[in-house]
Length: 581
Image (cartoon, rainbow, N blue to C red; front, side, top):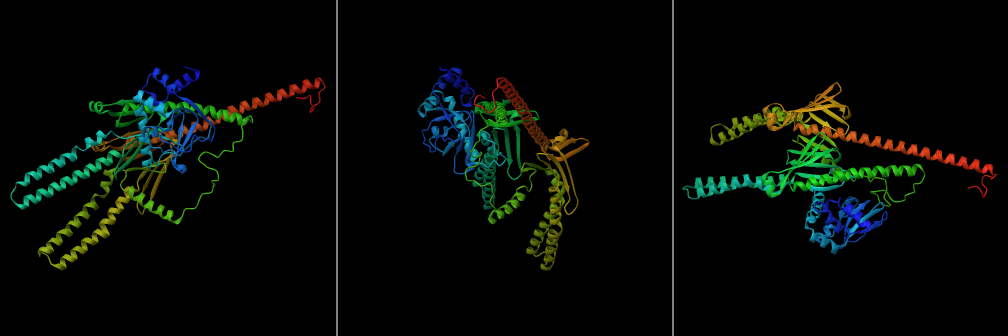
């Protein structure tokens, strides 16, 4: 092998798709790759064919445009690869590929790529998972993803979890079939009709249960980005949460599986961090997910080191006057773009107003939701039920009394005049007293909220048509956190208290669902703020270092000029003459 091939082998050993290969096998593959260098803004190609070559990014980064809009751009960095979808499935989806900096690629021809996948089939699952992740990212609107954040991998629970969840619907369906067989030989139309109705209700319940199980199975996502690992969980109409941890906080990644899990190749991945752990439950091929997390965590560390060196080098060149002017457009912009923002048409304003109403209705009973990086918690169901159960019972009792009155009137027990008066009184009590009472109690529950922002924790207590008490404290001043679940219901329903000590002040988030999750949310905000401060301090340290080097360089140049001035003065050389250097 040549020196270049040896270097390629060392690099390929760090690329995830070759994780299952031996060093000797990777050494053979390294001889098949060629190097391709791109200058800034030099397109790799502008049109795609199904049999294009396969590329791995060795240094720099690549912009992959899968559409005409800027939002359709994917950013790939060192260690990532592209065109595997075209080669594996023959569906070209890439319209344009370029870069904004000098970039080096490793390229293998299409024919040799197919030979490689055929000879080493353990590579193919790593390649095949990427298109699935891309499809999930494009088909799901992950609004929380940052502008500079790249989603690498998306997984869901194993399909076996959905199948196991169908046990209840299947039992209901079998019970419905048994009832039909039981009443088919019975005498009397009443028994037959009752049996058919009961079977229909059971089948309908089984269908609804099965649909709900399918939607619920598809609403959990396990995601790895270039910055964090994320667990998205959603229960329809009731609960939505995002549990995440920055890659830099991960201490260990472990996998667990049951006997059935080892048979069907599913299990859980436990990500341990400084503040606790996040568990990716029952996903397919947990060892692969663990390897991906470890891979991108190591890649993030290496990338941070490279960025630190580049920043220092850039600052040094600027300080020493060696930086060339770059007329290239800034990243994310194109030539001819205007900085002015267009005004919002009236139709879009209307849509925004409607979306605000939909947002209000969408969080009608939610205990936890996020809007613009603000996490809002409400008190859990028992608190709401404790507030609205009396007006709810009175409303139902009034409605039941109205039904009974109508039945008595139809049977001739009460007169029409009495029925009308009683119905009017009952309706008036519902409309004037019970419903406003219910709304007041609901709004009173809804207005008591706890919030966690990127800078503060907030406790708001507001009575409808009354006073509002708002307490807040900076996240950076939090001294300690603890959570507890109190009583049998607290443990069964998983709700309790989160106590936050800020100096001499104590904040208590009362009766919140999953207090451990709330505590971790606060920990994550504390870490994010600390991380931001560390980055600012690192930038200041870099600047001080560059300033020291710059001052030293300027002093050296002045001393050198003084030396040559004295030297040539001794020989009588005039300043500005041809003999003066």
